[in-house]
Length: 186
Image (cartoon, rainbow, N blue to C red; front, side, top):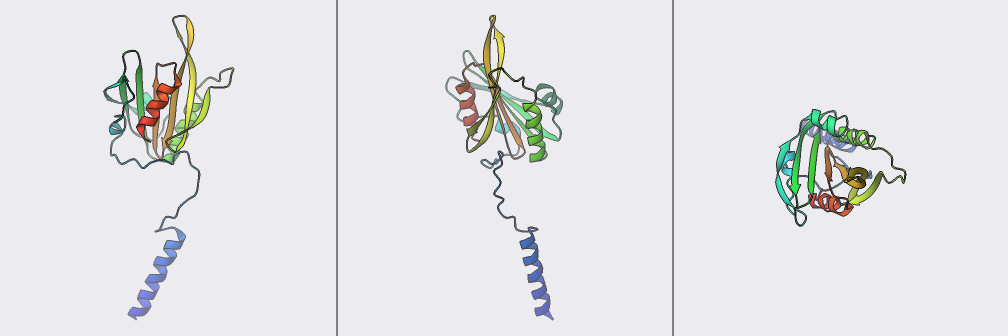
């Protein structure tokens, strides 16, 4: 009787393992959220960059509400937590915003909504996909009027699973924001 019971249990465990109920196999999807695992418990930790780009200093972190995310970026649902890191150099200000969503689908939906908020430029350089720390990110370009002339501004954004990263500042050099994006490591 014990042999039969143990044989049935072995078959049940094997069946569950093959069906994916216990053992999770590798899905070979090419998801833009693939990237290094993020070993932190709070997004306020993620906005503090350890290797800050040259000439910048970290000024602090402020929490961001779900309402503020929806007003400043795009409609956001299922926001768990958000924070913004503030960085300053003698002539530039940069911000790293990290938004945690309940799941990866909510993060991806938010990014789709966010991309839709940008006005398409005549040269069609508004949104460009770039390679960043082993995954795909988006670089946006817009223009601000400074001293009576149009000056380009760049933002970088991407998701890593249920986390969305947004980097923006007041430099007309796209390399400055890219250096910040790379410095996150995610």
